[in-house]
Image (cartoon, rainbow, N blue to C red; front, side, top):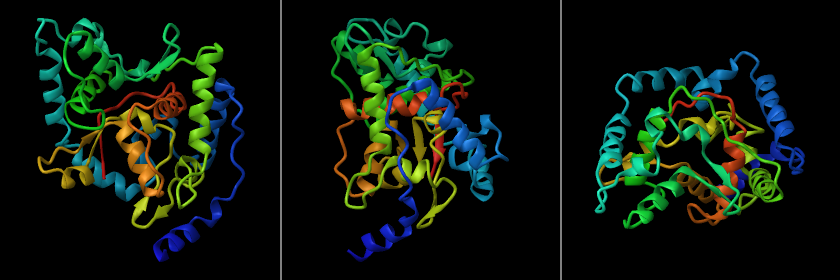
Length: 285
C-alpha cells in the first residue's frame, strides 16, 4: 500500500481533463502532433520516432552506443530464416506477404471491411500460418517477434500509412482505441495518456517517460529488461506485449494479446504517428 501511495502522489499532477473521446481522426492527428511539438519545440518532428531518446540527451548517448552493435540484428536474421522457410505445403510467408521485401509494416494495422475488424501484422502472420496448415504462434515474443522484426526491418524508411476510413465500423474501432488510450484503469488509476501524453520527459522512479508520438514506429523492440528475464536472452517483444506490461504496471489486469481491445488501441496509437518514418526494430531499456 505504501508503494501505491508513493506512486500515486507522484502523479497528482495528472488530474488534467482528458482529451475529448469524440472520433475525428484527421483533427486528432493534427492536435496530437501539435501537442508534442509545442511541448518539445527544440525536437524536430521526425526525431520523435526515437522515443525517449528524442527527449533525453544522456539516454540518447547510451542508446547510440548500443546501436553500433544492436542486439536485435540476430533476431532480424532469425526472422528472415523463418520467413523464407517453407511450410509443410511448400509455400512460404511470401505467399501471404508478396511485397514484404519492399516494406509493408507501414500499412499495419488496417481495417478489413469484409471482416469488419482491425488486422494487425502479428494477427496476419498467424492467419497466414493457419491458412497454410501450420499452428499459430504465441503473440508476445519468440518466433512471431522475430518475423515481425524482419518485416519491420525491411520497412525501414517507409512512412506510417495507417488508414481510418469513414465507415461506421472502422470509426467504432478507432474510437474504442482512443478511449482506451485516455481512460484510467488499475489500482493506480492511470491511463496511457498520463505517462506518455501529459508527462513525457519526466521521471517515474528511475525511468524517463517517452512521448507517445512515434511510439509505434520502432516496434517490435529488444528490451534489456526482457532479455535479462529470459533464459535464452531473447529480449524481442511485440507492441502488444508492451501493452500488457504497461497495464500490469498500473495494477490493471492486462487484456489478451490480439484481443479486440488491444487491436483497437494499436489502431489509434499507430495512426497517431502517421507520416513518421518507420525505424523498427528498436532497442529499449
